[in-house]
Image (cartoon, rainbow, N blue to C red):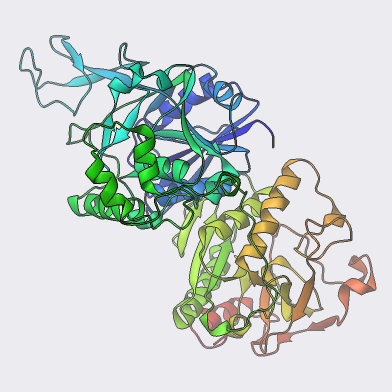
Length: 583
């Protein structure tokens, strides 16, 4: 989508997230600007009101600031992404001002100002003082009777910072003297480094630069990482002085400290990895050595010739030829044949609208937990309300086809397994379903050995059909498909000819041209049909459009490998939950 921007906000323990989102909504001017906030291990307090331009992703367990930024970036479909902290204010029209002058190989930051968020006011003497930790007593009258916040939420005058750097240990430093250099003049100019609070780049380039390196840990060295990737990849880091953001600095400790738990050990881990990668010239995407960056901005306070000489000894000292530095958008290659399937990892993407009767949902989830523990399979669950099942991600959206498609995509982006099985909340899976390993990476595979059973009376029926709940394929293929599928549905392009399932389309109307194949597990899966199914439940042949849709039609009172279902659904579900069948 042209001129579109996703603002990514990783948030944990952020009391000003609501105010930050309100400020962005008030000041953004782009028609296609949106906000994607990740509630990383905690629901927002105060809560975030529903808004069509705001998407909330909830993680039941915190995954960390870097991982949450990657998670939000995977959800984005925009041309540009901007990461910002959850305690910031913005200039009017900041999004349009940033997008209107932007090169593909740039990473861009707006001017940074200090945010005056609030003052404390003593309820007794009305004395007012600058923001900080919750006071224990009034600094003027000594009262401990109570205090309240008086909100300002505006940039402090005289606090503009355009230029930053890092020192020999790669620690962040302001570089105020740089503004007097000739190369610092103008509205959009080069800068050496940045604070990690706000930065922007093309979404494709973000992934070409490998996103945020989660091995750094949750926090620390983010500015150094972003700047080194920008410069060493052959691109540039630019500051756009035409617009600004204001950042609230929380460095006073107590309840006015860092939002993520932070230890000296974590900081040291980030610094150690940062020094190894950048000063050691070990980043595989680099087209320039680290010494090139130091020489470009020299003289740099604290950096001498001996430091550059020491760095040069760690790797090549010459920049790659200019024609080799052009950035190339990320394209995921498709390898058609897999030679060694023993090394492949498997995972489950589970999705639910949270409307299923607990008598069914508890059985489905307990069965999948048993299978996952037995086979060592990871579960990512994507729900519309909090769910204690696997690693849970919550999308507070309304139930529907687009929402389900987005749930699947978010799950695919969050999981790191080679092979993914789609699992729905109302289908009881047999362990043999997960024994199948797709032989090709460019084919969508469907287990057609699925019986449908009516929850009201236990009537069972079988016919050959490919359905999303039986799909198993390689994650890269599925993720690529669902990115395109979400985009097409959002653009109003959805039709029956496009197909509801990957590979099951009418040429040339499909999302892609990869085809589908079937397999049959030794023991069938059980699809429970109930009053809240998203698709119709049909138990008569004449309810289908064509006989081709119901090949192998079989009506029965029992399911092979599972036993009788007719007129005993409660007992049938209890038998599964107690482990008497389905093992």
